[in-house]
Amino acid sequence: MKSGLDFAVKVLRRRYAMAALHEIHVHHVTRPDGPCPEIATLTEGFLHDGHICLAFERHGRSLSKALRRAPLSLPRARRVTLQMLTALERLHRHGYAHTDVKPENILFDVRSGVARLADLGNGSNRLSQGSAPGTREYLAPEILLGAPLTVGIDIWSLGCTVFEMLSGRTLFAPRAAAERKYTEFAASAPEIELDPSVAEDEAVESAEQLSAGAVVGGRFQLARKLGQGRYGTVWSARRVAQLPPTPWPVIWEHARARAADEAHAVETERQRSDREWRRAKGADDVIDLALNFEHVCAMIALCGPLPPAMIESARFRASYFDPSGALRFDTKIRRAPLLGRLRRATNLGEGELSAASEFLSACLVLDPKERASAGALIEHPWLAVRGARGTRAAGARRRRS
Image (cartoon, rainbow, N blue to C red; front, side, top):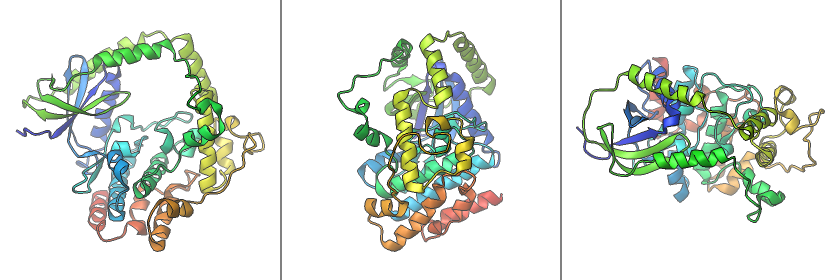
């Protein structure tokens, strides 16, 4: 039995038991043809004091931590890109989009350069037009516009991530643009009043947090926090006992009971109003809508005009465009093509700049119908270099199997 900090244990909040169940399900249904080394390995699920806990094989830290220090070298960036494409190809082949590809959800071992895709809890095989999965800086244009969604949203997010690996900078920074234009984003602007239910939920979340040294499920001792998100907290952990797996029906019944309790919660007037605003505008509030608008403008500056058919199909087109398809507000957009962005943000030579730009251009296509698939991108010439071949060949063998 291993005794070191060889595991990462995600302790889900009690109210998100169904989210934990869903994450287990996505891991299960996307590996009928065996484990995918490029995806974080879920070893078991179990219960602890009303929490569902998920234990994973420990693998480095998040890629975001590495990028805070410096961009990746070109060979490492290529290798991580190929590994993520292999992981996404597996998910997409089984009908699932990850929906939140970003450096924080990529585990990266700085010594070996090996990466794994993590956090499959937001994975979906029922993408709904008008929904908004993901993290702002990595959102695909069809999410912001409310156009039909496909697994191609992951490819756009990966393109944003690859740019960040090469440059150490986020490709899109709508908040920075908004701070230059709107007083509401100034440091002196008054804070938006939160729904009281939000503060209440934050208090419950704080009370649920465990401490370092706690033993969960009689199996793992928690060491230190690796990260904390909306659904739960991830800890580095050591196994202290090898116990029989918790039967799947036991976890299922627990999650169903928790979901039944949550279903009885009464929606407040503020929550109802916020829900209706999002349904109509595609944003949480006016501040969020302003960020979305700046984000759309930045996409146009980088990639050119949005296809008219895409605008026409967008549920939230009235938030951004007039009936003729022109932007609603008098905004002067200066083109900032991808090649120039890469040249300013990286130290790549001209040949490498051109090759990287061609690859990113295949990811960052505004029209999702024209965006390359994960399988096609695995064969892209930018990745056909020494150092990536072994991973590429392994991915090809897995696809054929």
